[in-house]
Amino acid sequence: MAWNSTPLSRRQMQIYVEHAAAPPITMECRSLTFMEREARQRDAPLEHLAIYGLPPWTRENMQQVSRFSQILPSIPPGGLVSSSPSVQLPAAQMHVPEPKRLIFDSGKLAMLDSLLMDLRSKGHRCLIYFQMTRMIDLMEEYMVFRQYKYLRLDGDTRLEDRRDMVMDWQQRYVMTAPCFHAG
Image 1: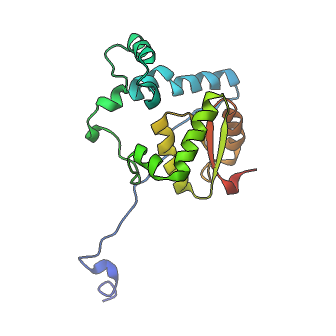
Image 2: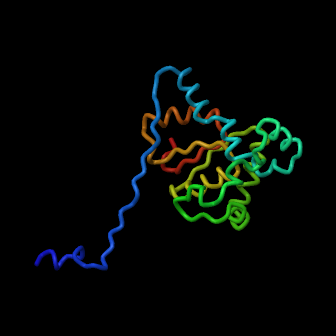
């Protein structure tokens, strides 16, 4: 009788269980040389270029396109992702509008877009703070669209990794972090 009085006994009752996600396996070593070599292999600039192609704003530059074709013949300037059917591409965890529309429909993001392009052309780095991790997720989609290198530091980052990540930021372009984790 107790079972029949619980919501679990109803046929129309549906239970939602979120998918489990695990961080990628990483190696840790005290040797800085080893860790730098591993980072170069993990980042793999040539493979990244083959998969994602040239950044969107350089695809109209014929000199860049011809150089890309010399390095990676038979791969379109948009990379393998641009020629892949949408069913083969991984789905985003949240619905994000088309990146161009997201940038131009949001005045703040449009201003940030022009600022980041200007800062990048002058060789500056940028530190961006957010209040919520969902905003970091949106910004991450933007960073991938613009093909910026970035480093994400949020509440899920282990304390011992934070120092190394901040030091790594010195070599990268953009870092996203919620404001309550700044220190």
